[in-house]
Image (cartoon, rainbow, N blue to C red; front, side, top):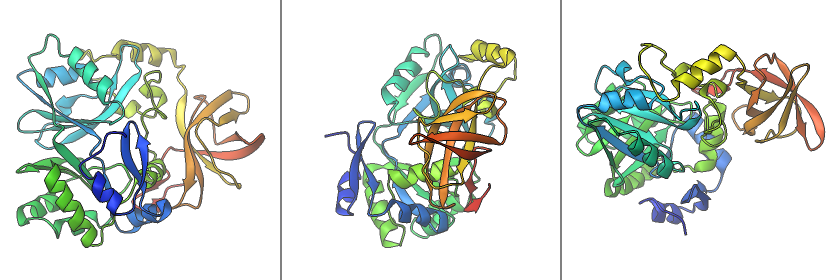
Length: 360
């Protein structure tokens, strides 16, 4: 038996197919992964993401600590509630994890991945040496992600007037508290929506209210195809401790200025930039029959080989798409080996669908 979120029993009662995910017993789907995918693109659904790890960072030197810890610069957060996405790197420039950090009235709130919890917390604690700052894991909080074009409006209709007003006023990539709730306009699907951190008992009631209001639950299967269509990385596949953010389509998350900010991994990234030898992460579109899968070999004429990091059938587009790490000079065409055959693929920007619209 794996770890379970406070919503596990409700998932079972709703007919979830439960699978192991990073040591957690989580719902893969509630009957149809594809239907759940379309539900998010066309309307909205709710995901239990309570397995994610929430850590509050406080103290006089919380800002200085995070400026050292993260490749992106928390000094960019100038108003309470504003969030940014960042890699947390090792000294070699590899990605220990990717995360979201919010500026709050008490300090900062960091949300990291579930499967990397233990190593993340150990690393974050290790890097505290010399800083007057404290880490507090908020294990008592559950987390729901309501995603889709109607997510905010439908959720606002179910909560208190104050929370409804907050939801209406939230800007993208902003999160603000209301009592014990922390409501953010963020997500992992390429659609508008909310991620709400709240006490476990409140999450159980909210899940029931959402289902009663026609916002069905969705599982990890749809979450994966949605994030792939949106070109969003999955830790452990599209990036790892052995992969530079420069090779994971995360160069935009590196804050090079101010030059004197010595974040962990900076020297390694500077050397990589100077060498110009990093591969790149691109999107692939298979225009023939077949399914692109992780670890399939990508061949680029005259340049060498790469590898698919994430691949699947895209329910929105009706064809197979993938993220792949390929030689930096790769152009618009490549080939992928599927069951012993080399099939042509189109190389595109790693972003296939956003806000329900095809981008390829």
